[in-house]
Image (cartoon, rainbow over all chains, first blue to last red):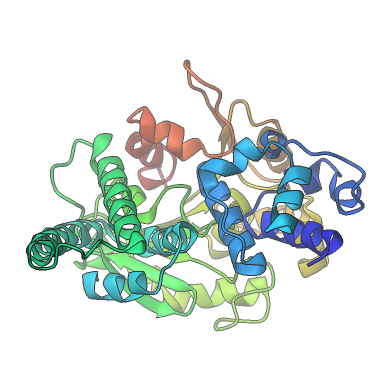
Length: 86
Length: 316
């Protein structure tokens, strides 16, 4: 998966998990284009959403990230880099 | 249940796979199933621990597999946490005796049996998380199985019920009309709807269309949500207005939202322009209240009384 594909996959994982903050704040386009750094805290995820995002990432990219680690990654850009490095 | 769990758990190889399994179960189980699973797995796990000790004595080099240990820890944590939530904020010593019955692909009826003419049917339209904000057994524990049945309306993720449920109809209205027969609505003493998050709009519309007694929308969506416009050809709010104009008697409608959830508050205020409704902000003195109002009410021990005052025992 290249970076563009990973970004699209992350957006899909967030939508699947009903995390709509990215869409709500009109940040999806900028994130897909790699123009904006989005803090994970700004996504307003509860613990269920964090689990579901991690499940979706593992299913779609085969990369296992634990929910408790997700917030510590800090930003969606760093999440993309982490997935790409695996 | 425990046999099914063990079979599914055997295929799990990561924490995320276990989490996915546990979320699926939390969305479906009854309080009885949860307690049974806890009891049976407890016995099974104790047996496994004893067996492992014997094996380790016989084969000192044998080490527990990593996945096995992880599975053990995750299962224990999950069951303990869920069981704690089941009992922590409700003064009931026993699990509510609901049984789960699949009426169709997306409809599950939770009932303890008994004469329907003495009971209330709560039709629950869930949001994208496919649960009533809380794990289903925890939510059911806050109902009275002797007086209330719950019909849980699910749907394929991402689709909602805006275009109907495939097994009931190809439009929202056709699906809602079929619910009357499938759920035997008329055989109940009264019938009410509950909508969670994205399920709020269908809960309000269904209560108006079917002429039900009451409706509660918890953190529901906006009456001008473009997805509803795309499905119906008109805004959900306009459809609600049409139903109100055509109704002889209206349900008691409550629009509840977290006091700090600005988006939900705005949606509730907008819906209140379309139909007679009571706005019910949920406050908490100790923390902010966002989208998931039921978890706050659960923590404060107010969930059951909230449900009773808004839909379950509302007049009419």
